[in-house]
Length: 352
Image 1 (cartoon, rainbow, N blue to C red):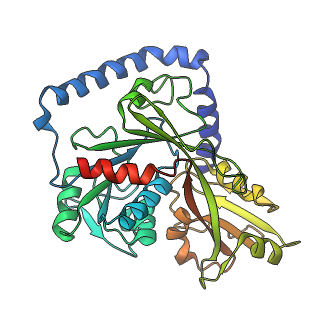
Image 2 (image 1 turned 90 degrees about the vertical axis):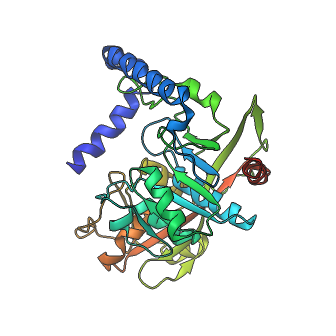
C-alpha cells in the first residue's frame, strides 16, 4: 500500500496543477463541496457564540492546499520567536495518525510520537512548549490551559477549517504549488476556495531553494490587509540519532566523501528534502520517499545498503527505537524574508 501511495500521490498532485479531463469530470462534486463550505461558514458567522472562545489569544497556522506545505517548521519558528518576546505559548494539534481517547493528551519536552503524533512530538521537543492533542480543539485548549495554567497563547498546528474554534490571528502556509488549478477537492487540491487567502492575516510561502542562496529579497510585501512573507528551510546541523554528535554540513560532507549515502523522508513532499540535500553538495546513492506521517514501526532500512542514511527531524522522533547507527538527522531552521514579521505578529497578538 505504501508503494502504491508513493506512486499515486505525485500523479494526483500533478493532475491538480492543471484543469484537465479528470478535473472537469470531478467539477460537479467540487461545486457541491463549495456549497457545503459556504453554508457551514455562514452557520458559524450567523451566531459567533457557536465557536468556542479561549480565554487567551489563539493563533492558527494552517493551509488551504491539501497535504504538507511546511506548516510544522513555521510553527516551531513562531513558537521560538514569540517565546523570545515574552509569550508563553502552548500548541494544540489533532494528533494525526494517533488513536484519540475521550480525553486530550498533554505533555511537554520529550513525549511519545505514538501517543501524540510526530509533529506535536517534534514541536515540543524543539521548543519546550507544552502540547495538547485531540480532534476536538476546544477540549485540547481546555486541557492544555488546565495542565499548564501559565500558558498565555494558543497556537494551533493546522485547524484553519476548524470553525468551532474562534481565532484571533490566521496564518496560511503555502508552497510553490500555490493554489494548483484553483479548484476545490476532489477536482483540485483546495480545502477552501482560493479567495480565502484574502481573508487571513498573513500568508507565508515556502520556497524550495538552495540553503546557500543569498538572503531573501525584497524583505516583504503587504497586499491589502494581508501580510506576505517567503520562507526557506536552512540546514543548521547534521545530528547522529544514536549518540547525538552534531556536524556542520561541510564536516558531514567531508566525512562521508566517497561513501554510500541514502536519504529517506516521510513528509508531505519528500523530493523537497532530497533536493535540499543535493543543493548542499551531497551525492545521494538512493532515496526512499515514504508516505507522510510514516509510522516506522518496522525499519524500512533493513535491506538498504548505506554508510549513512539522512532523515528529517519529523521522522527522527519515530526512528529512535530502530537503533540504526547509520541514521543522521538533518535539523533545519525556518528563515523568513520579512525581518519584521515576528515583531508584527507579537504586536497584533497583544492588540487582540
